[in-house]
Image (cartoon, rainbow, N blue to C red; front, side, top):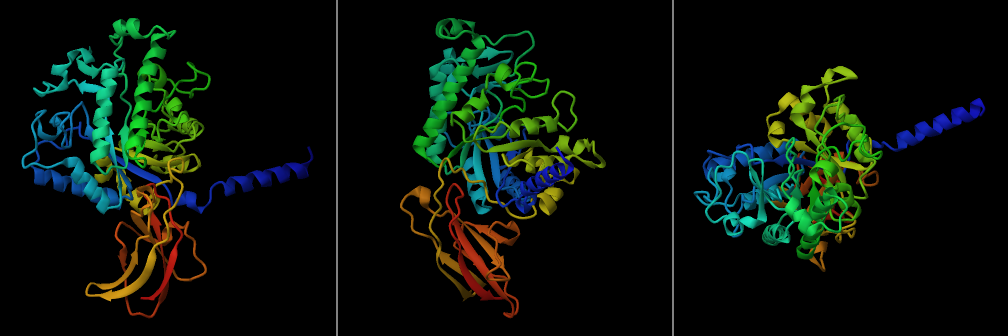
Length: 501
């Protein structure tokens, strides 16, 4: 090959690389920016209703400032409820005693949904499917299902679980999820990494009796266990879709699917494995369309000897299995470790650069939300001032719905007692999937030179059909464009209005 050909190939390669990372990759217009708010760390205990509500509001305000657009809130840690349920008892992580209702009475999930809506954040209801009794659970509520059907449960170590092998266990979990999806205006059902429990050294999960009874068609107990979980995941997906077809179902698996030494297709890592140790075949679930997104918990640092962050990002980016893929980030570990290539910095810049270098990765989720709120290592400051400097819409889940709503109507600017306001009316909709639930307001200095893909021009994402204009002296012209979003964030065509401010 001659020198000219080599130069041409090099220029072509560089051009492709540049084209693959446009401006939107630096500040994407669409990006999932989530945060997990957990209950099991006891942060809700010892607070009155008013104190806890104010505490949650302060967390949401701080997360909004950090550019977070989706909240994953723990509502069912151990077959209990941080919401009003007639199926399972109130959680001890809310009131200190399982089965004890909050006083004064309130519904934390309903409260959080309302507060998230005010801030135009998605609300994902986070449940643990099998766990019933953890190490620190002293006693179950008197009316707990365990006392009615102890045969549905198994003891492993000093913890109690629904038996994944039993259809009765699955039916109960489906009943709980059906109840939540039916009664609450949620955007997603979310599960994390707890399926079959994390293994105890030298102790096998006690299901030999059930394998002998139900596992005859399987060549190994491991395949049978994976199938038990597969059945639940498939049934959950079908159940959610049948009730509200816009509600997503997402999984946040442990960060290693399989190690390369176990499977040549696995990652160059050396740690616990979803597939082999937790019996969670998350790639199968994505391929089969049983889940709508995954957020692998890639919590390690760049350079970790057993589970290198960079290695895992490359691996997951190559295996989205045609479903949205986001990355679970550990805030404290990220700021604790220095960037090997830049010792003057912690690892957030390098991790964000890696995450945004792949088109198959559509965002991230922060563990834990409190670490962002507390601005550990200036993490929140970095998000708000740089990485989340501009607003971002949630990525479109086009396999669920790809049809945008109609355009907004009757856009007009009006003087009111509260100032100069831009008003519009919602487009007509034939079905609930077509309804406009949010609006995006853009502002430009020029009518012709506008770019709806540039998030720096977004001045508001709102559920209200109006926007208060920042009037000054009426001498400068601006062009506002308004679009409508449906429940799955499909965006309509824009309608333009010229105003002088």
